[in-house]
Length: 85
Picture 1 (cartoon, helix red, strand yellow):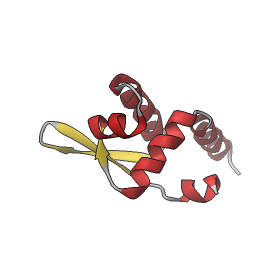
Picture 2: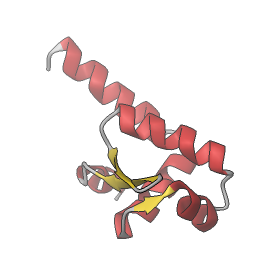
Picture 3: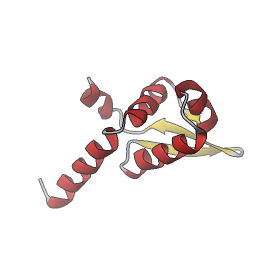
Picture 4: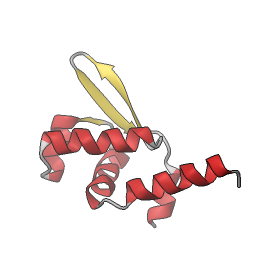
């Protein structure tokens, strides 16, 4: 493994160390969703959801698409679910 690969792996594991992020990934596993929907389903505050989704996006686990006035998030690396099992 190159140093860059090791760094990327460590960043992903650090992102998964937060239970709220795992809950968000679990919700997104079923279907893409916006922040409002994810906040309602998880019981997290909207600013918290936005922050956690940003971390997940930064490490390449989710991405988003602008739909009207909202961003809709989806899992873009489903291999994360193998790690969780």
